[in-house]
Figure 1 (cartoon, rainbow, N blue to C red):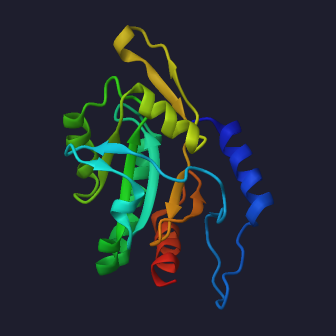
Figure 2 (tube, rainbow, N blue to C red):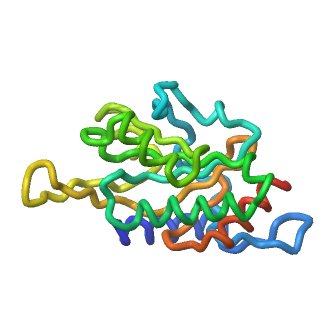
Length: 198
């Protein structure tokens, strides 16, 4: 996890959009950082773990959460996916209107089969996305995600340092929120519910 990258993104987002901004016509505020109007992305073209090409347009009508990680990640990735699974569970029937996407930053090891076994283990509706090295470099650059290999004891045992925030898009495909690593499932669910009802 790159704390400097996360901090820089949060500070830039705060300057551009304001934190915990009162939503128009409501008394509700987000738990995450409101980055509405950010120039991150704004889209991607990757393949899901079932072999289908995907972009944000495929999920129009749903709130989408986008998280970058890798299946060999020892802590940040499984924790985040568990928190997302808890949020979807809390939403009950509305959880079917949320799509969680996990983009691998380790395409050398994260094969479609591995993603297919790993990602849906947290929730059957979650999708793992991958691309080749060029596509991965493009999507991480577009969304300003830091990812760098750190050598291990063997060539195969490397780890990947990476940004740990999740990005949230509304039902129209507009980027709206950044959720910090460690945001509890109930707070994630509250933010998703605001977007589902707006």
